[in-house]
Length: 179
Image (tube, rainbow, N blue to C red; front, side, top):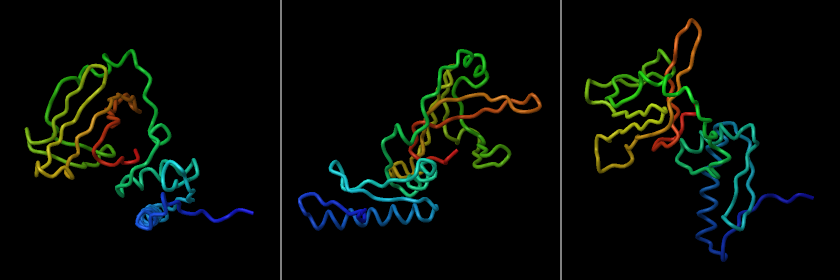
């Protein structure tokens, strides 16, 4: 006979038990709002573990991180490192250097942000496709506005002989977009 999941409080601390219950309640509300099925398990190395079905993992990760929760282990929730593309320097040649971002679209054709010349985030990109985007918050003392990121760039051939420039953010101060 299976028993209901329970919370485990180290050293019987009532304060910790309340904190764990509040954290599970907050995370559970986020998962429920995203229609993700979930369960909790007590754990020795932490207070509790939230389990979700493998097919719901991407949706759960995006929902939880957008709500400010930490999700781990990274090896289970992050995309694997890309394989090295020997043709990357030729494909990325026109995207190498540093510049100020004028416009960002996501998805293509839908403008997400626009900046006057010289006032947008700074992008620096290497021939290998590795890039860093530096975004200084309007209020520098507020790290909450930090949105710098880094990752790798790829060029994708699409229909009609067009090429699409795609940046995959790997390190980011913002929660993932799910894309």
